[in-house]
Amino acid sequence: MKFKDCSAGCSNGSINLGIVKTSSMCCNSDQCNAQDAPDPSTGAPNGNRCYSCDEKGCSNELKCSGREDRCIKATGTFGGLKMTLKGCVSKSMCVAQPSGSALESISCCSGNLCNGAESVTQSFLILCFSLIAFILML
Image (tube, rainbow, N blue to C red; front, side):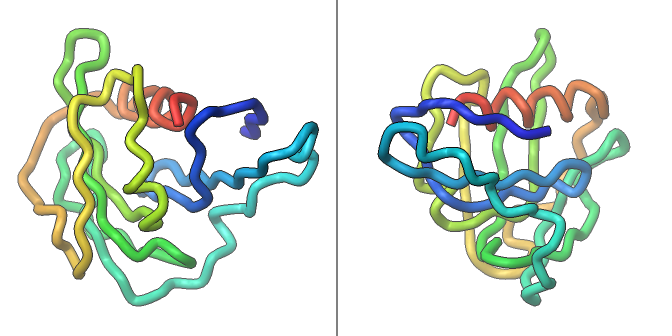
C-alpha cells in the first residue's frame, strides 16, 4: 500500500517488523510528494539482526536491511489488548515519536538482538493493524 499526505512530524527511513515492512520519505514544499518512498523490500541485508514478533511470540530473528541500523520495541493497547511490536528500524524513525497514536512506549537500541526475546502471545491480524496505525500517525 502507498500513503501520501501532509504531516507535521515526518522522518525518512524504514521499519521492518518481519511481517510488514514500510518506508517513508519526507519533503517540504507544495505537492512535493509525487515521488514514491523507496521500496523497503529491495534493501540489501546490512548484517544487523533484531527480534520480531508473530502470532506465536517475539523470539524470531530478523535480518535488517538498507539503513535499518537499530532495533525497535514498541508497546501499546489495541482493541483492549496490550501488545508488543519488535523489529528493525532506521535511526531517524526512532527519533520521531508519534503523537496521538495508541503506542505507549517506543525504545530503540543498537547492536544485534538488543531488543530482547521475551515471548508475548498476540493476534497476528491486530499486530498488522497496529503497525499501520503507527505509520499513519508519523
